[in-house]
Length: 153
Image (cartoon, rainbow, N blue to C red):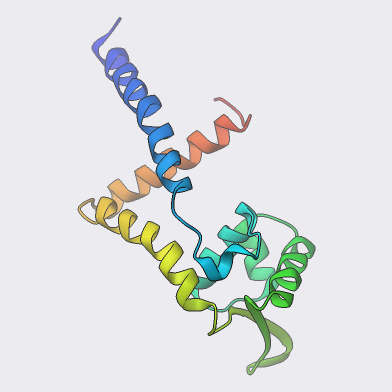
């Protein structure tokens, strides 16, 4: 086996041991007590993360980012609005458009919960160059795609 091949195998071995530990630690991040009763699913976390870090957005913008249909996002927004997590308001620049945001009441709990993960990523990614961060993110994206049955090429 070539050195390059064994380097890849060494990295794979390390990652196969590391990934379950990372997932286990991520799962142990406690949902804040005030959010516990809301029965948030993984699909909600991605939506909340976009709103937390990027600010208010329209349903169509969120659908594009989440790579799902606008009707799917609209249903999630409706569900989370009824639970007091999200609110919709008219866009002052275009009254036909509605903007979605996290309610002021729920923002601190969501920020504390998702912010811990973001802080860990900031520490891990901070020392890397922009190109290295891009490579890292592209690598994780490719891994996720191929793990889910995407094109292995």
